Image (tube, rainbow, N blue to C red; front, side, top):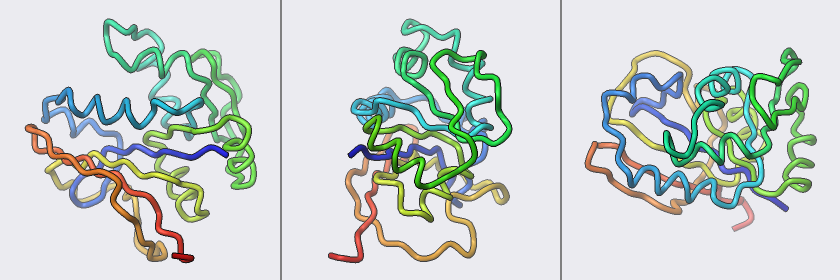
Length: 185
């Protein structure tokens, strides 16, 4: 059975909207190392429609010379959770799963193996609520946004997580990796 590994860029106050606000922080190569470790075992990419529509034009023309992650993002099969997207020709190796269905996501984990998710706030929040996220990888930027979609909005049931990794980068960003703690422990 595969796992779902979520990666998010998040502000100190928990906002995970389109991360243009991260541009003020120079990319630290160690961040790339951490993210490559996250998707190194992943056989598929799972995305919500909005993130897929943002990623497609951003990644489809990139090569390994532009970004070391380009082969993963372009060559790996992408699964899009959407009830409205019909045409995936804008980005190779993309397929629409249909509307969110936790059972379909569980089956996909079994069929494909490990899945990588980035952005896709609505999808990630639904999967967190349904216990489908096996690892949460956060790059926490030293900025507050004040408003915007939050990873854990008000009303989300409490959850316990255990730290798998933590790193501090010279640009002020923190990398935090967590796994859910089972109630059976």
